[in-house]
Image 1 (cartoon, rainbow, N blue to C red):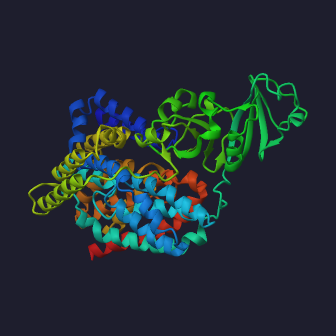
Image 2: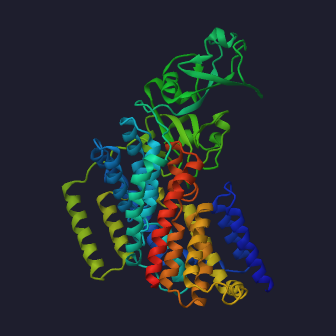
Image 3: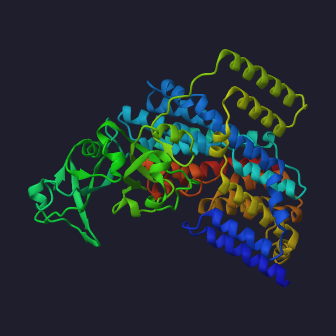
Length: 583
């Protein structure tokens, strides 16, 4: 092993180790790794940037833009709400999970879950059922549906990008269809049977409000509370909220004694349910909420719950430095994280993916939310104004022409998508704001650097050297090799991310297939693709898992418990299909 190979191996190992630390974002691990690849001479800057121009990744980027533009315009959430209004739990599963899977086969999985998460939660609340019974199956159905087509999930397109970079045959939707249908049908059937029995019943009442938050308030100078004890001021409990701690300059007072004397400027932290928080914000109690210029109108403003999705630029930001007020015309009054209410000063908190925020919304909040992908509302959003008759005709005729042109092989898939984007722009359904909102720049950096690492590894000879160290005949059965590929990828995707799992495993699989001639390329790369989406065991394995964690009130053990059943069903179906291919 020469010095260049050793350096590449160290860089590769460093990225893998960094991905195991949840506080290190994948974009930072891969981004720094990609820079070091260029600076160390392993790849030129042009070679690294060229990885983003493979047709499969360009298709991914255009699909992200189209999915973001269409989801708000089609009113899918409102249609789902009407369709399931009178459904019972079992029929609700049978209606919602298949349609979620089908939509996820052509739209971005994260967008589909974001679209349906609010309506599903609100349906459960209206039925006096636990949202926790329904939200995890919703996320898992989106994951399953992504495996129906080559465009259903970013990992399938990333894998095709890697195959194109290395001159290998790409996979098509026809390769995914049968195993994808197996896991969708089997997975949905398993969730219908198991969800009610295995998932926790963390109920909320019919007023949707049992989730607890910690709310920060401040004693206004000159108010009747200053100079009185907690008991005299009647603040031991107020509107059903319990006073848990007082912050006075740099001193924290907890637990709070009834005889504690209040001072002007004291920050009082109350804990309680959402309906109690609403009462406090609407009262004139002499306690100020954060960002008074907005919250002083709380009595006439909406108090709404929003969620920070994975990939948001708010992740890791301190609230006071995030410009949240200016960006979303809203003030954060409380934060809820992974089933726990967050304590302490809101301005000092660092936000994380999956956090639920209770915000007082200003007049422009809904408009600004509609232009951003960095914050999702848990309330159903009204669809935008319908198209005029002329624009409907233009859209219908153009879509029909593009479909026929693609079917007759006059246009390739990328050209068809670009044509559709042009039509949507013409009728007013796609604008520059949609492009900015839909493109995930962090994902682009991850993909670029991940493909760069795979390209460098494939050309370095390191993987071939590693396989030469395996004794001849150590693993004789091709079937065992397939199980090993699928199992290792499943492990990585639950510990890291699906894109990272595909990128890190691809060189190993490619060399394995060149050495094991009894395994077809389709078998090996399908094992890799399906293993990368076998992400049901942790909240961090797939973005949609983390999205439902807060709204569902889940803990990590809930994913392990229910996810173990889903992993078993999924694995048996996929491995059985791969075995059938080898027969």
